[in-house]
Image 1 (cartoon, one colour):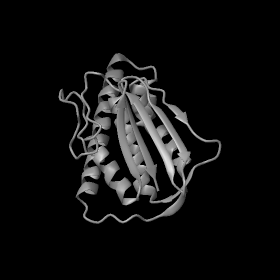
Image 2 (tube, helix red, strand yellow):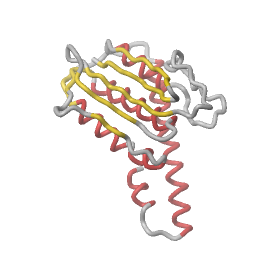
Image 3 (cartoon, one colour):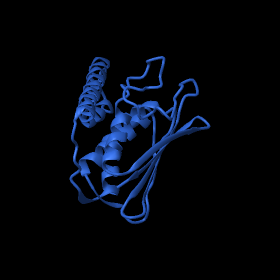
Image 4 (cartoon, helix red, strand yellow):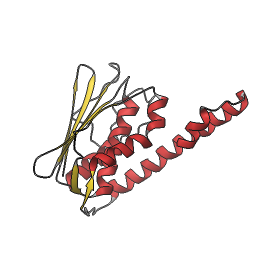
Length: 197
């Protein structure tokens, strides 16, 4: 997707530009389908055992934001990212934490009505605190108490492509790691707070 994003910025004929747009949207859809199948496989797995290791959580977050740059740019979003002066480290399952962060970022991009704010800081007892905020369309009815339920989308209009499994995976993996996650909505802003261990 990153290479296609670069191609979109090149000087192209109208026909070439149209073809690149078609390919870009099909590639985005394919990526979403792969992510959905992966998430469903996680939800259906009976046993998921964390394999803990030490890693730089700040770097993981920066890499994910870079990977999602095309989707952010497509919606005209420049995320505001708050990081402490020193890198945040975690002794946890890298793959699980990466999936949690990825799904939270994707959710924010999908439902944001204009911006995204991300904050990361070191927590107590080798934990980390991750908070992601995005304004939501006041017409979209979202129940924060049901947000982490499997297949809950909160979008009755079905204009969004979300399947409602991404945040269920966030909850499942967070629980497996002994962390906590919750959501709230105030003044048409969705805030998801995560304590990860």
